[in-house]
Amino acid sequence: MTKPISYGAIGWLYGNAWGIRQHELRPIEPKPAHTKSHQPKQPRRMIRPAISARQIGTQAQPLAIVDNFHPDPDALRAFAATQAFEPGRNHYPGLRAALPPDYLAEVGPALAAVLSGVFYHNAAAALIDASYAMVTTPADRLTLAQRLPHVDAVDPGRIALVHYLSPESRDGTAFYRHRATGTETVDAARAADYYARLNAELAQGAPPARSYIAGPTPLFEQIAQVEARYNRAVIYRSASLHSGVIASDTVLSNDPLLGRLTITAFLLLD
Image 1 (cartoon, helix red, strand yellow):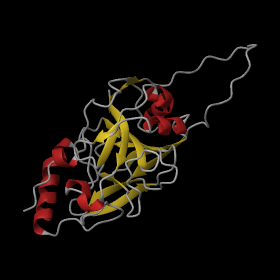
Image 2 (image 1 turned 60 degrees about the vertical axis):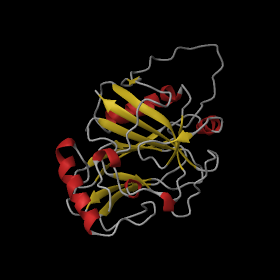
Image 3 (image 1 turned 90 degrees about the vertical axis):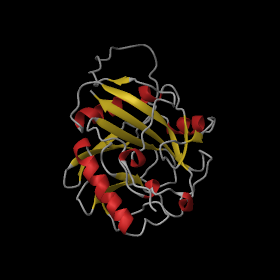
Image 4 (image 1 turned 90 degrees about the horizontal axis):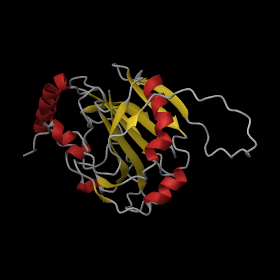
């Protein structure tokens, strides 16, 4: 008998357990005009972040793609290689580890620009959680919840971020519409009906194949996909139905320098 799916089983929710906690992101403030100085100019540390915006699905939910998200992604990979990764919780199919303490400060300006320019949010945002995340679970060991699109929260003020840190990987993130109900986002008002319908479908039909989702399925239509690129971030509402795109030939190593290394973060807009 298939165990019923609930919001708690589908939503990959994380507590403050990975080293960056309850920081605030403030809107970008204009920088003061530079004055002449006799100090030599320092070389730029990074290419300027490139932000593009999309609207996905029939609900036109906002989604941001940021290339060159962090000034030194190689340093992030090197730091990850020194960390002790632990099994993920709440249905995450892999490992997690703490981030460098300055991660938020380094990406804060680009993130604040996204929240303002794409999500039209000009107030502070609290960081709920952020960590390294690395998918390592073999496809044949996935649970039912891990073989379905999911949401991270039903609160419309919750924002999710995935920062891709594998130079060779093109696996990204895809977004879905539930075919039977047309559901693309799961809010508090819609959650009970959506999960009741989904559970009925799972009880009546064959369970999803034991594989990662890499495209449309009998129950879900793929409505958008963001390709992973090195040092790219994708930012979207946590209530959007989504899943990592994990191709069958993806290297699921537990070595951060070889596997599908990402950073995930969750924000709450004031």
